[in-house]
Image (cartoon, rainbow, N blue to C red; front, top):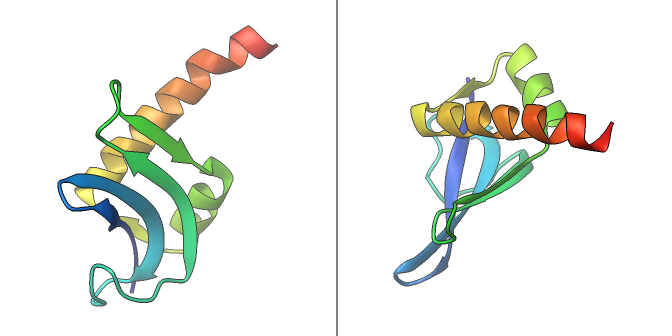
Length: 88
């Protein structure tokens, strides 16, 4: 079964994360199928960059996001919706 999870990167006490699609039972920082975005909680406000097309594709194909990633997806979707009228 596939999951959309956070993979920790960054230095000691300076975390940043990749949002990746991987096997549910694999290690946190192990091999992954695709990198679909990044999350940097150390910035104010937290920086979330997701490729929403690929996230939707993987969810449609059965990948299940973890609780934290589902919150990030909702926040990114909210940011995408508020930013879109400004560009239109």
